[in-house]
Length: 166
Image 1 (cartoon, rainbow, N blue to C red):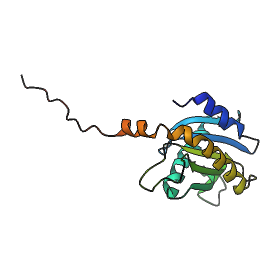
Image 2: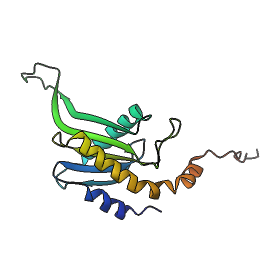
Image 3: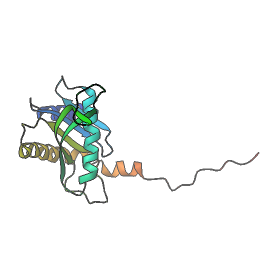
Image 4: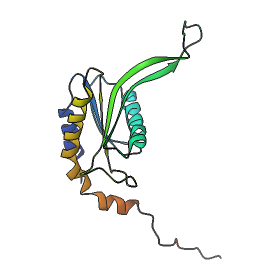
């Protein structure tokens, strides 16, 4: 069994002022564990999780996905906006890496993803290095449960019992 408190501890170790959020999530975007700077709003963490899942879907054949992002909001009537949308908040750089012992085949999703969110001041190479190191560290613990997890997700081939008519 994965020990979430230990995972949280490991995720917290890679945080710094500019690398402010580390997420462990499934490919659909459901959060498993989060480590973030205390001032980080929960809503932004959820947005990063959803965006990370989307990035993974778009880059799933690669070892990782990257995006530099900001959340946009429509201009309010009366604003002197020159464009229809304006930045609401900058999410910064998001790196998404599969927690796998190797690059997963295209027809198989990883069990979990690691997403790192940092300010633009963190170089992509540094973000990749930290993410890959953490993913390699977590992969053996996560992947030893693959067979159990896939067996629990497999559809049952046993027919449902029919009720007899009265």
